[in-house]
Image (cartoon, rainbow, N blue to C red):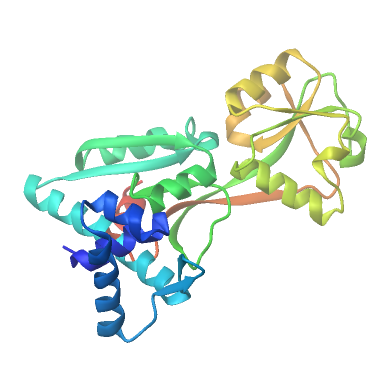
Length: 281
């Protein structure tokens, strides 16, 4: 378990206030100040900057908080595993992967854990859940900060342009008079497509109209019954493509493959566990 001073630092980092931290931890404000001075003296690094009756953490203080938070989260997990002699695995998964890759992961995870908890959301939410300890790891297709997170490669997925059967096009420019179906901001799929557009010196706003829909399955259903285009993983629409309910448009210059990764906090104590999970899938 962490020294109480580090727990106080974690709280202070979230409040930027000695008063609010004291209220959160049910201690006095002078006690919070004393703990921080003690930590600075022991480590011989400045942690707190005081400016005009306001405080903020130094760069070293932020890094120390990050380390302390991860240590506390993982120490609690280790204790839980030892107490129950089993793992309780908590995983996150992006919406785009929830109907394709997630089921086989759950099937394998239940062979090694009595309890498997899953949270499904977009890439940015899953990454934040990992930071906050709400999930142990996440299956994501979006980009992530490799200085903050570590990962194991799962597989590559084809990222394609899919459209209503009435639409024909050979280039991205041919589609600008169409309705674009996009996932919400924070979605890995949206980021992949918008990054590709930017390289071509285009933007999503170049399309005639945009409809944002958080659910990939809802986008698929919309395209089956309405004119429009979207960009997603081919595995999400494999049945619709085979049955000719939708069509894949082969656009000039659009050839995108993207890796799917199992992502977790950098320097995690449980890295070997995550490696074993990948090997078993």
